[in-house]
Length: 402
Image 1 (tube, rainbow, N blue to C red):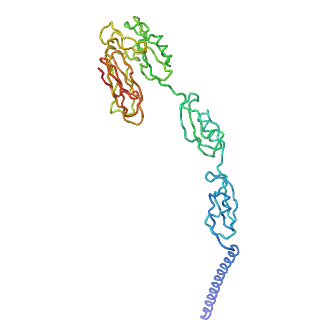
Image 2: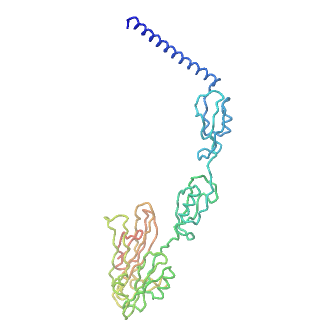
């Protein structure tokens, strides 16, 4: 190929490249100007910024919307945040720049969807949960109280009340029954009473009598009560069963050695004191109840040692309580005042003073006091006697009287 022909080909390629570049530039410029013309055609007039209509009542929206802005409802739905006829959302979003005449679509609230609260009173908790689920409601706060009329684990009351219109998925507060409260009673002493008297008294006090054991005891009349189980002065539930140990006189009794272990008996004037709290023990560890002291026979329990002297019973006070013989009563005419400061804490507590004498024990004071209260109790000055102090039925202190 000659040199002249090579230069001709290069020249042709260069010209074609220039022409293609010019054509491409013309096309880009033409598209740009066409876009501008079309934009001016479809967006004629002045621009504006779309206000925020969310949370506004639909009437306020139409009053406050700028002139030239078209507002329409897009849809309506339930909403638990916006009241009825208030704007939930808008399209386009607030702050969008548009030309006059732009249409703004609004989503309007129908308010909270409401249901009728069902009547669940008297239902058990499984039925209550099912009723709430079917009504599109949920359980709220739960409170528990004792009730003599409504059985355990059944609904006593509810809030809102049955039939009220209430929002979907809202909470319903429940008042639930714990059933009948078990009344707590102190078992008085039946020592010295006859068997028939003991049965009648137990019935009158709200207890039931259980098994009757007997043992040989020449020092007591036949069918006289020697001891009970649970022990005297125990705190029991109403209707609890109390078994009796009675004297068989000179006859052989029915109680075995194992049976007698159920009853607490002592002989003579020796008193056993309740276990005192151990500082090393845990604070919530409950102490065992104190032993109840019961004379093995009236003759061996008198203070003077004279077998002819027997404990006297004062029927005017309580025929079930054995009191001291005349010699002891004379000594008891003098009283000793005991002072006790309630322990520190947050809640009131029950304090008891139990007077222990050679012939038995007797509660001389019981009351509920606030922390750091000063409690003063007078106890009879009886030889060989002492006072045990209990806080919430736990022995915490023992003091000697004489």
